[in-house]
Length: 228
Image (cartoon, rainbow, N blue to C red):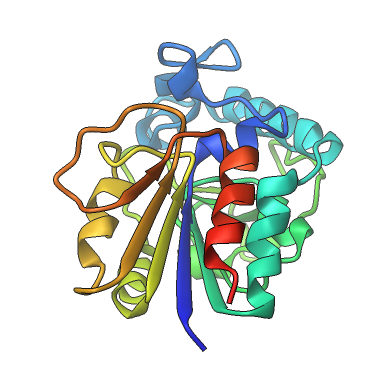
């Protein structure tokens, strides 16, 4: 069975109504990114209450969103291929669509961990709020399980290893000039088929077939191309 790696970005979830700061000039839902998505903001500048409020709002919003056709087609590919999803998104729409093997590069909105705990100690909180004073059994304040700017990306090595083994690499809703997508594509083995589903023009040294459509339309077209 051929191996597919799907690298998904904000463009796939945008069609489910989830906004991204990259589409709003450095503002994420009207919040400056440096206030709600950086390591220093939490640990050095005491913006914990603001950051908890922001991610609580994102979690509440996520509960109202549904996987779109692109998410569902990605899940359906598992009928004929061994599929690994590597997503830059922090939502759970791939999970809800039915994908079974997912690597979250930037963490997961529906999980939390202690602020001084190891990344891999995170536990599910569903769509519930995290409040100041909510602590782990060890006494750590709970924080969102998100990889903020200024933090390492623990799953990047695992993602690169998956890409290296892929017979087919599908990039959806993220350009080949934004990292980590721009870096991961270069791990593709010689002879791997690479498809980019994105409506925008892309200048890249990588070799790929560009399906210039939004995620839902582009994945319908790609599904036909990939039919066994």
